[in-house]
Image 1 (cartoon, rainbow, N blue to C red):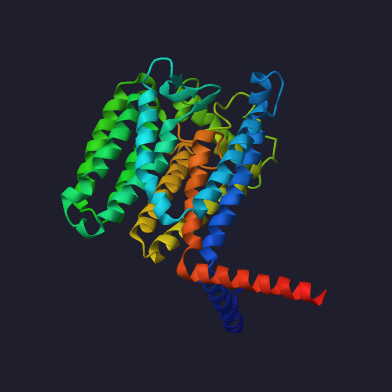
Image 2 (spheres, helix red, strand yellow):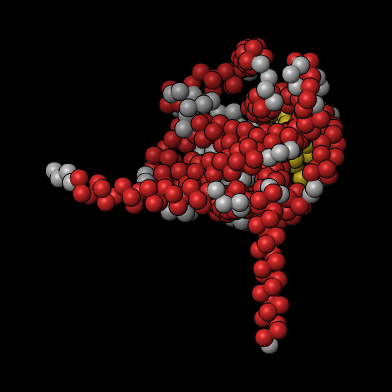
Length: 415
């Protein structure tokens, strides 16, 4: 066994410091957050489309008259809708975004209420949280996630100088989001209700709510969640067997157990795109809630770490935007979106790894589903717009545009 000599360590230290300084300089550039958000979002969306194509191919073939591309085609339609919406969101001035806050909340509440109307609400996997609109099925709770972030941020930004009062913190934000959560819970969608509750806690935390409010909220919510879990035998079985899915392998443990099989067979670098065996009918929801398992099987540990890393890049860039923002609304929206997307990623990965119960939470930007994809893209569009409007970033973009125009003018003059 050889050890590094003092001379080797002396030589390496300046090189390491040089790499560190270069990384810090790159991260401190005005447009870093903008490019990180744009690049990480585009990569996640691309990986998602590839994985939806692969994970859904067998399911599509079986349920769409031999058409293996039916599901991914629908996902591409949602992408074609979502990207222009995200572009518009990135270009909207803050005043226009804030004007959407109340209408967005009201539309979400109306859509969630319509789910309770017989003939309109559609039950999927035991949860009645889908709304049938002609040939489309939408999940209003996914739209509500973006709506409550915008609405709560708008209300708290208006109350910026009065947030030292507990009354101002609670009314009307806690009540408004509480109505949304109750409507979601009426559809028996406990997982989405918990995500909405996490967003509420995040908004309260970022505006400086006292610790006792969090303690009371978490205790009350924990008791309610446990009670609701006991009202459904299937949900209770999932809660009691998630730590050892093989204990009830042929029933509630089937999905998480096969998710673990998929991840285990992927190894370091995976079996290759399209080579998953679990997607051939043994893994339920392979292209939706458990797409991370297929990703791990086909792209291995490297692929799963890449996806998790991209979410962390988005979180880093968004927190940077929030920390540098002078406008309270930007700060609150950015933080709310981070908790929403990063929280869903953590819950989804935890489900697949059997660290959390299976509660039907999709992986943002990666799982199939337009109801989740479009609001997520709009949220990322807002973050990208916030990053572009940072004072230093705006100046850098203006200078770059001016230099490009000058270069084009010089090129035309030379001809």
